[in-house]
Length: 371
Image: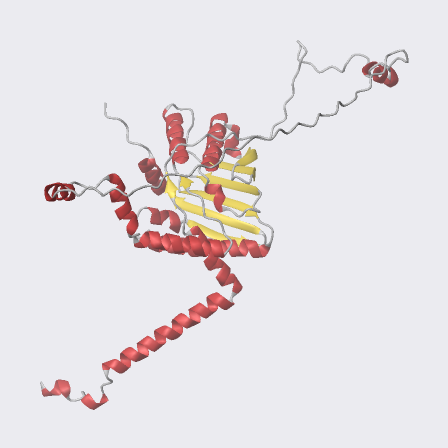
């Protein structure tokens, strides 16, 4: 036993208080350095402001109004019975004669000339109305309040609290989550940012039901490779218009209709409200093969600084979401998302193995009713 304590000297052991003091000092210095970076580095400060704003994102499942999507199209109407286009009669015979025939006839000098005159509006006659003299109001005499008996007071105390009292008691002490939400909204308002809208999941679940019904009916085949590109203009309310669909799978009218339904779901869910206000044009490319599901979203903003600021803020938000959803099913979604900026363009990509994506989509569908 003596050999264990040969190299152990009590005089050389550093006191525990000194070590704790050093650790505390190092922690204070590290936090002050991080705070200085946030205050004096504009890009980092802006990224934290965006992160605070987007921290209020929430998801709901509520009824919605279906959005009407306008496509780019050229309409040709043939009014002839044989379906052939013909110029109007006399189109090539004479330009002056055709123009004179289309103009209205000149006015005749014998026609009467009517001059419209405005009748002056009569001034209203104001008649004085007598006002009643104020009468003295009677003085209210206080009446003694009825005092309940001890039995009645005891019975009243034993009664259960009403809904109003319960709500008042619940609102008396806000939860820590409510305090954090109020503080985040305050910081976002001071930074001049608006609150992030709620994302409605119901349009996507409805779209999944339509896709499953079309697949079960044999209208579409989702077992092969799908490749489609969607491009459209983003409105101020987050909806898409002037939608143009291209790609190898766009030739299938059933798949094209299904993609248009997906565009309606994107608009109704308010998920496009996450993009900056100056993002006016959007391009979405989707590729689904036997190995993976790959989706890319590209849009341009007003300046490269705005694109970099947006990408940095969302990257921080994704990192926080990965930590918060660790061990859950949603972690795979956040792990597959990547955001970057290239000049004025914002690039958002998503990649996930096809089998894993299929299993997650099946869980989102409502359970079939028992027969």
